[in-house]
Image 1 (tube, rainbow, N blue to C red):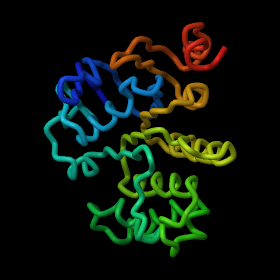
Image 2 (image 1 turned 180 degrees about the horizontal axis):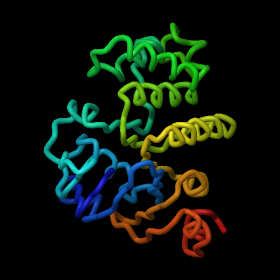
Image 3 (image 1 turned 60 degrees about the vertical axis):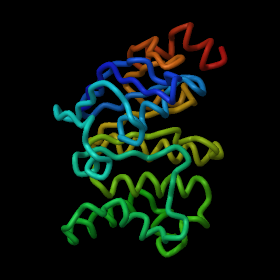
Image 4 (image 1 turned 120 degrees about the vertical axis):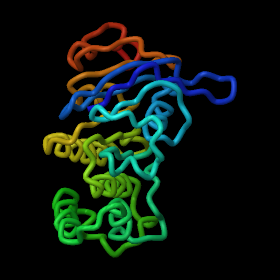
Length: 233
């Protein structure tokens, strides 16, 4: 589904991502873990064309490195950004509709609204409420639902647990698992390494802009280097 080769991201003279290569197969959930400043968010932003980057990015076999941002959702890629990025002065329903802006079949969209409200019942209860008045966890659910309204093949998730209470983190990750079970391919960036690897089938570890480890999620959870650096053991 996703093939990345020699991806590089620079901020002026500073290299944030230093030529990384990785892949995500169709239907997989893959975690990208690492400390703050490792380059994880820069990687996702580069994949979503929100940052200029060098290297090759192929989605379902098609080179998307030169695609304009607004065309990527039509190609099957959606990003749930760090910090959620909901439209605070629009309602829940209006935010979800923004996720489907590129679609034209109203009947299909109506069915997807129903699916999102079934998957995320809190949003159904608050569909007429302004997004800016939702709790952090509800905004995270809304950002996820908005992305799903574009019917993505590949979903990029950036720090979905950030700033959330433990109970809401659990609910968000239960929802992510349900989305994965529906067949959506997921690339998950998450600082909570234990939670990310418990959710994913494979994982990559980033340090200082480079991928330093790659293995199955179970093997990474058992790796002494990962346990010491990211699991506090």
